[in-house]
Image (cartoon, rainbow over all chains, first blue to last red; front, side, top):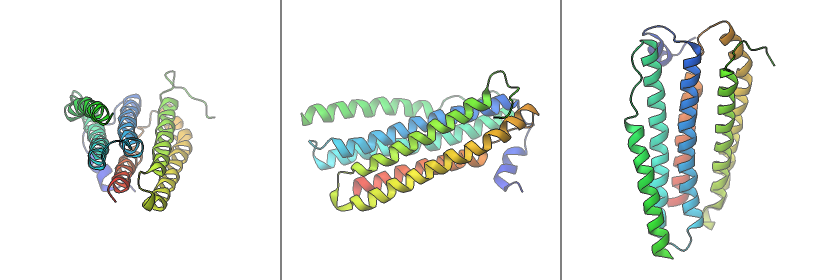
Amino acid sequence: MVPSWERKLLSEGEAPDPRFTLANERTFLAWIRTSLGLIAGGIGADAFLTDVPDLQRELLSSLLLLMGGALAVAAYRRWWASERAMRSNQPLPLLGAVGLIGYGVGLAALVLVAVVLLAG
Amino acid sequence: MARTGDPGLQVERTTLAWMRTSMSFAVVSLLMIRTSRPETVVVAVILALAGLVASAGLGLVQRSRHRDRVTDFNEAVPVHGFRAVAAGTVLTLLLAGAALWCVWS
């Protein structure tokens, strides 16, 4: 039996070339690994920045963890949007929110450097 | 291994991507053991082990799907990963939530 949310996705257009479906899945997985990298950074910041004052360390760590979570959601949404676009022969969605999170990672890196330098 | 008629080895690369992802998931889960709060380390270890089990599950499910996917691919049957993709997203969110708990508890 096909769950209703799968039916929703399958209701439009027709199945694309299986190669494209698989490529979409691999892209999703690459984003998930990026998200896992941010989560690792968040846990690592909390575990190893012991010279940094508690509140700063906790906020930095939370920023990274929340970005990791947001990126996982963005990866899922993008996978879904791409799947639908491929089924109806539409152009693939632009990077959008995922691109913004890219800048967020850059910002977090700068904050991390600042926190480490100030603590040192 | 099932014979593959896929010259780009698309299914194999996808399965490997799943393996890499589930291994990353395991490693990140285990990092939680290094929580900065000694008083909650027991829960952190339990969360880390739960993450390890989840990652093993993710990897094993994909491993067993591999052969079916090769068959589907060769017969040009559409391949779908809805459930796996949704599960991967939810597990990653749970991991981030568990880590936040470790940071703030």
